[in-house]
Length: 339
Image (tube, rainbow, N blue to C red; front, side):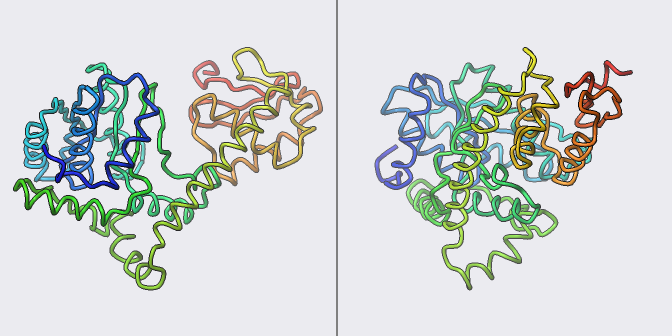
């Protein structure tokens, strides 16, 4: 590997992200074989070489495309060229939960990355999401009615089951990555794979890229950077709301396991803070967020309960749990304990 393989802006964006892993010794990079992940692997390999890190390329074989085997071979070839470790796994995408194909594949992919990372003893994993991905995510979540947390879209660093995932290129436009990938082809003859689902309109992102993006590019050039900025601002607002909600929840006489709190103290909060503290309560229990309509219905029922909750009329099922009120305290109870 030589310096001409690297793009200065891409390399510069990687270094700050690595500060989140100050004691990193073994690093992973998710490598599908596409241009984005390939160029991230190239830059990560250079960084690892300079800092004495052990780099491993992680590949998830979904089996959803006929060409998946060739993509794996192409990705493995790049890992060998870079002198990086290679780890692959094949997954079966579970559609039984009613999720769309994109969501189900994403769930399977993260699960596989976590398992491989743990097996290798990695300190963190790099993901190649970029500014265009971030802008698309903001747009899709806006159309789905997401709040500040949802509009924060992808975080530069996040954890799943204790494994740090870093996205160093969220501020980098994809055209910069594609230009780097083209230079790499010219210099080394290795060419990234093309995933047809990226533009197929059967998929949400594919439909957005095929139908909406060309119009946005024509009418509002640079819209991706604008929406990515909204994501950063939404993340700051979401973090602030989380801090306020945590303080409010601490004043609700929470139980030691944090699965219950005082109904009367909750009622003393303003309606916006009532809603936010309920989201905080469910999130810390690891439950998914309810829809806005469902949250409003929960709040309506909580306001109509007897002051001490003696009528015990509230039992709302949510994400495998039951939200109930007993003796003036709101409770989260596993559905299994009620059977």
